[in-house]
Image (cartoon, rainbow, N blue to C red; front, top):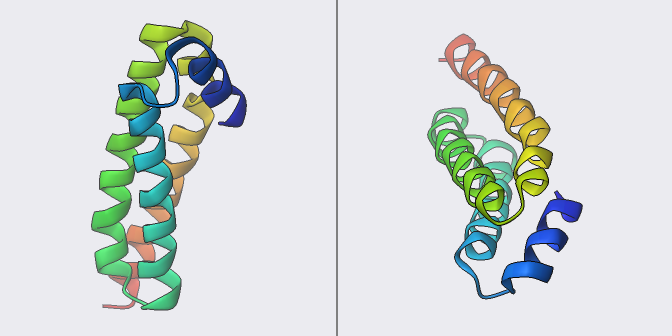
Length: 96
């Protein structure tokens, strides 16, 4: 994530749309942790992680437009968040 952001930051600048998306997905990542761990609300956390996954996908696409390898570097993160979403959903349903 850091290398991808650095590559895009260097070429497009910190105030660019791809970097704003990157910062948004970072905030959403923190938000998920708050919903899931602090407020112990796996249902709300699941909705939030779906929004996070979409934000990561959008960031990856935008990074790809600037520097293709930067977009590619976010794919493992996207896969990991997809896996975390599946776990989150399972925990939510098993505890409902």
